[in-house]
Length: 181
Image 1 (cartoon, rainbow, N blue to C red):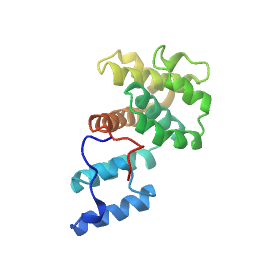
Image 2: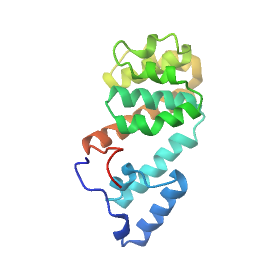
Image 3: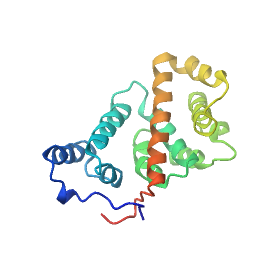
C-alpha cells in the first residue's frame, strides 16, 4: 500500500489539473497509480508526463533497447511496479520472455547472457554501471558509442537516468500496482 493516499481525481478543482488528467488518459489510456500520486502536484505531473513521453516516444533509440534499459533498471532497483508496467511494452517492442527473464537476474549480471546481442549486453553494462555505481570506467560509455553513435548513446544514458528517477519515486512512496483505484 502506498505511503500516501493517491490524489482523488474527482476532487481536482483546478481546471488545468482536470485538463492534465484528460491528457494523461489520452496519452497513457488511463491514470496509472504513478500519475495519480504525481497529481498531488499538477505542475510536477505535467513536467513528468512531458519528459517521459519524450523519452518513450520521441527518441531515435529503438523501443526494444529503451525497454531493455527500463526493465534492467526496474530489476536492479527492486521496483516491481515499473517492471510490471513495462514488461508488456518490452514484449511488444520485440524483446522475448527469455530476455526479460535474463534481465531480472541481478547477480550475475545479465550483461553476460547469451540471450542478448552485443548491443544489448553493452546497454546492460551501461545500465548496471549507472544504476549501481554512478562513477564508472569510461570504456562502458565508449562501447555503447561505438555500437550506437553519439545521439543514441546520449538517449540511452538519459533513458537510464530517467527510469532510475521513476523507480526511486515509486519505491520511496511504495506505489503498488495492486493498490485499489
